[in-house]
Image (cartoon, rainbow, N blue to C red; front, top):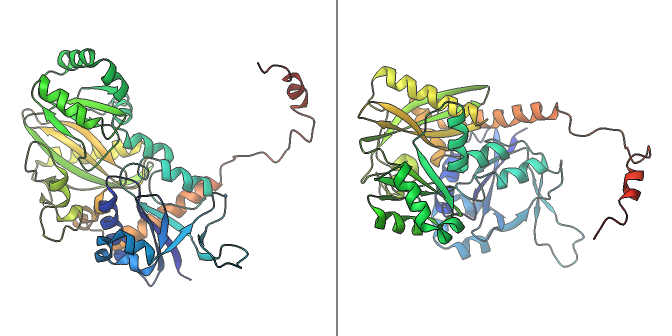
Length: 398
């Protein structure tokens, strides 16, 4: 019997298109002798669709036609119901028919509303086995501020930073500018706290540029982070596969950037004319680094994965200050572009084997979760518990 694997992609995110590319790459990598793949595309409006037409990237040039020719579907937020239901039925149908029974879910959703714990929370509510970080680790990994707080508390180096909300910025610009200049100086790099793919990021070498870049970043996020900028910067990426207790690090890559930092165009529109995801961007694999520095970065990537309680496949991006070879964790991508398959191929794990491992990890975590206790069989209400307190609560409302 084949395992029915649902691959979720798209979503309400500025990284919507990148998610589509990554997901179709993953779908094509599955061994169809072992798996039946159910593509589930989430539109920019948040509606779910499935159908064979979703498997051809060319069809995404006309999104209205794409969804019109697909079947709209949904899952019930009911624990233990792993069915995918058709949203629209005939006039006389009594209930929504089942499109497929799902065994495992693999989210390939980049950015907000998908990589930040929101979608993972839905999957945990339903209880379906799924690959990738859970709600907590997704949320902590996605938010650059929270992530840096956790890593720093565990002794994992990150660059100095200042963070604030959009409301704080709009009501107290001068105070925030003073904090940045006193703690960090120039140059700095400004980022929305919870976006990936370099969306909304900019550098600032003076006060006017700082104001300009913060004004741009707050269009994308309620939380903004300003970081010390390493001028002699070498960016290195490492993927980690497994779970917090048992994981391995990949070979390293050095992305080739066109400016001071890796832009959206560097990541997704370089390398080839086909624009086929992260693996098409310019990079050196393996990165040309001394052996001791390579092992230090691989260890640091694994520690980042462990400390954040990650699961599945992630990519940790680090920064090397070539002035003294100091290494700092920049960010973690809990659902990396192209699932970092090119790093695992260079490590000796094929894309098909990577997908096998993700399915196995999903089932392993589900078995571990099911061994935990979440409810008690006893009903305290049947034993009279809580009744007195409920009566005593009357009349306390004002």
